[in-house]
Length: 115
Length: 114
Image (tube, each protein chain N blue to C red):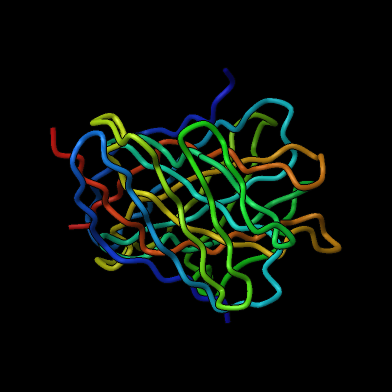
């Protein structure tokens, strides 16, 4: 079955770049996502990348995908204290005949930003 | 901005009792989901619901669980005869009918079974 793995914790200083890594096992994954969860809040989709892309940049966020190694990373430039949260890597195979898009999540990486 | 809302934010129940977790999806959405996250573990898929029926469920979603959309706006997860291991954060999500769009998640209900 599908499996998504992440390191549990990352600590960076404010202003530095953060890189959160993720590996997945399902080679048929079509979409790869990064979700952010702030304390007491739901899961917020930050960005996603299609499996036919290598990189996607969105303001301070850069997603890199190495499909051969099944490795996904999220880089946050100029990390701020407001970026402190849990970041979940997730994957899905996209649409099936029922229109459903099951998402498989990793355990989440807790990012701590030190002022 | 439209959002998925879940109530209550925290529910404490005694082992063996039944609980109903409530969700109000975004109004024009057609696909609804429940996920759960046991503390320190992964966010796990439970069930998806479309056109008033379950479209897919995981092996976790056994006869103890049921879902319902009773009135066209609420989407509920019922857990019968709760066990200690049902303690988790339960997330509701919804998605519109357009292909490849994201699922919007609620803030979660923390269920504690004592």
